[in-house]
Length: 123
Image (cartoon, rainbow, N blue to C red; front, side):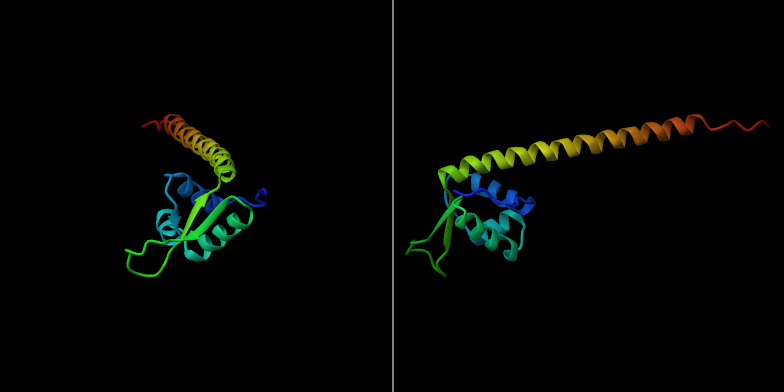
C-alpha cells in the first residue's frame, strides 16, 4: 500500500463513507452520501485503488435490475490508515471549531465591554 500524497476534505469524506459499515459501497451511493460530485468521487476512488487503500469488483447481483455497479471496499491496511486519517481530520476540525467559538465569545465580550464603557452624556 502506498501513502497518499494529498489528503483533502473530499478524500476524508470518501474514506468516512467507506469506513461506515462493513458492506461494499458503489460509486453513486458514495456520491450521494458525501454530497460530492462524480467528477471528484470517481477519480478519488481510482487513486485510492491504485494506492492499495481500496479494492473494487463488479456487483454480481443477477436479481437486481439496471446496469452493473462497481463495488468499493477498503483493504485491511487501507481501513487502518483511513481510521488514522479521519481521526487526524476530526481533531483538526474540533480544534478549528473550538478556536472559532473562542473568537466569537471574545468578540461578544469586547462588544459588551464597549457598550458598558460608553461615556454618559450629562444633561
